Image 1 (tube, one colour):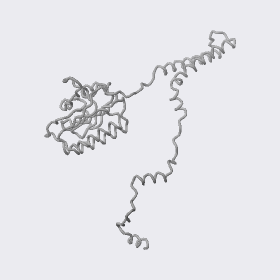
Image 2 (image 1 turned 90 degrees about the vertical axis):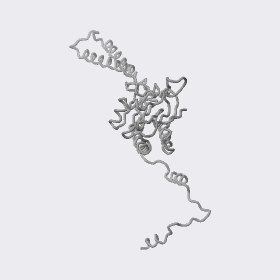
Image 3 (image 1 turned 120 degrees about the vertical axis):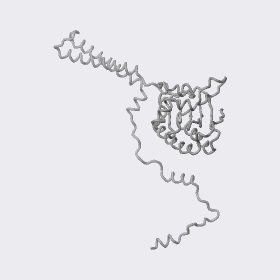
Image 4 (image 1 turned 180 degrees about the vertical axis):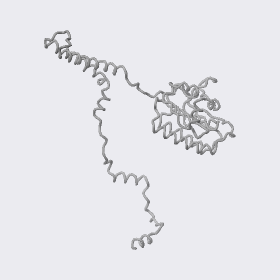
Length: 294
């Protein structure tokens, strides 16, 4: 009862005396961080062996060769020093042991040679060979334009995306980033996306039919890359993200397998958000855009 009377007696809108200010959110965050005193949970364990191997890759790959060579020399020295005949005798236990040891030594040497000859290909960032452009539908509202700009800035900052094309309901809503140079004009003029030609291709049809994201981790291995002539010729990876059942977003990356699993999941959510936004403003009755390029 006393607690209830106390709560009822408290004013709902207490007046703050002049000269007193509520602490801002930034100040509150800083104070709470100081009170926590840092992270006190379990620390990650250090993988000493794994770290040493990664830091001494060349030595580790050559190690079986040295082990096999030393073992082979040790067997020959032991046979010479022990006074056993150099010719192998199947009836002798020493000869059988030496043959087994020689086989293991040769196996180690061959394994080392294989390790040295087969190395993982280093993946590096490849700068796009193309023209920077920015083409956007002229009849969309400013709210949609700002959302498309936010999408591009977010993807180009967080992921390896360097080219973005959005086609919705037969209209190229956005083409931004790097594009291949058009052969129809002199100078560096970005190639214009042809929505009708793109929609007739097998890549577009397959993505829209499946309704799920398609990730071409190494674009050079896919013959269907000819259906994406507007992307730079050295585009390394491409994500084809359906936008509902009316459109598609094409993201070109500058790194082979550069889009991580979390990137793909995030891009899927962005596609759903764009579908909810564009479906309210873009229809087939909208005339083709007048575009600007930079």
